[in-house]
Image 1: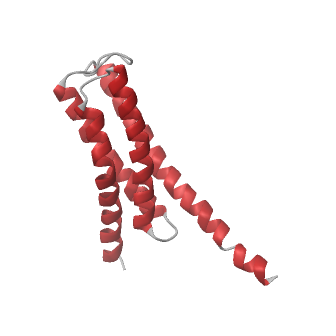
Image 2: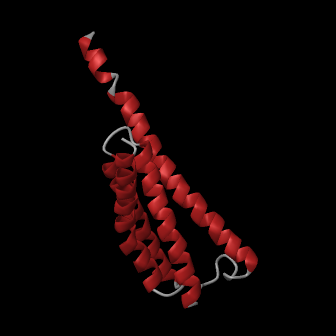
Image 3: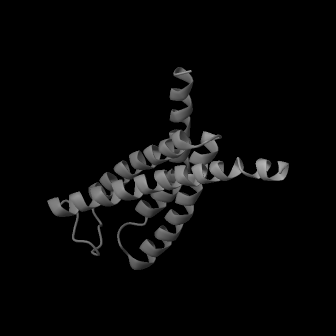
Length: 143
């Protein structure tokens, strides 16, 4: 009976951790794709599937992706059952891996300048840290 009691508390925490990470990831994904679509519809970006070589276009895409990455990491930290910075950095590590895979694919497919996917990879972990830091800084003020 005591073994069962010791196991049960970790299950809700694991679920809450997974939910926090998923919420942060989905936030970044949906906001990024929705903003991309918005700029495609406006004609700021070329149609989907066509290369985007304009420096201004890529800087615009990088700027909102950085903001969304910070926001997603903040959400993961905010929803974390404990160790909020760890959750933010785990989300950053997931983003780093996915961004690296995307960068390799984007460079091979020549979808735009090489610096853009490289910048996404290089900003992923600092954005995750910043999202976690913002959560920690704001949560200390409310205590």
